[in-house]
Length: 295
Image 1 (cartoon, one colour):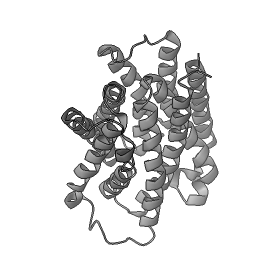
Image 2: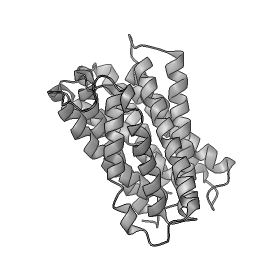
Image 3: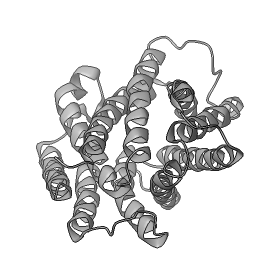
Image 4: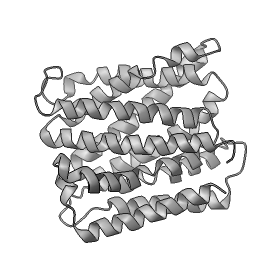
């Protein structure tokens, strides 16, 4: 076990929590909770989870931290908006393989801007490629899926935006107080989300019987995964490796859908045997990538 092992465990936990959240959120969306409405609610709850960070900070809050934290918050919000807009213009199955390229973008930006002190080893580059390939196998659109060029471009923009964010966060957290910075980042996301409430589907506040319970339940693990990933990336300078472990959300998604998809009433809970097999091959490649990262 090396000194970065806690970051890897946090990323694995974040991937599992994200998969749980996605499963619950998808059920809510199928029942009519609303895409933008779910996004805003999730962001506000996620921001609230970072309030304790304000009291964990040891250094004084500076204008630089506020400025760069707000910029990173804007980047997070825009990246997430690209992802949700992509979902509105095409199948969710299109989103998954494209977002699986995020570790590639992280590695690219880390090298481009020289953001980590150590050179990225060959084994990590191989793991990055395997993780992208595995997510492609896990979530590639099946026959009858809705394809959209605009949706594809938005998905790529979302993956690139999150990749840039994850490559920049370690740099700024190691040059300031990480807790203050992360509080500003996610606090900004919550404040920006509030401004788009007028554009959400239908009325935002009234409780929607039978649908909102899923939206609320999905917000809990989403907030948990955000905390895990913020700690893994913000406290350790291994953003590329962390994202390879985080890509395990694709593996967890396959397992959770197989076990609970039918019980939850999800449309994809009755997938064909060939689709399940293809996704399991993708999950195996992902595990190989995670194993390579340990060297």
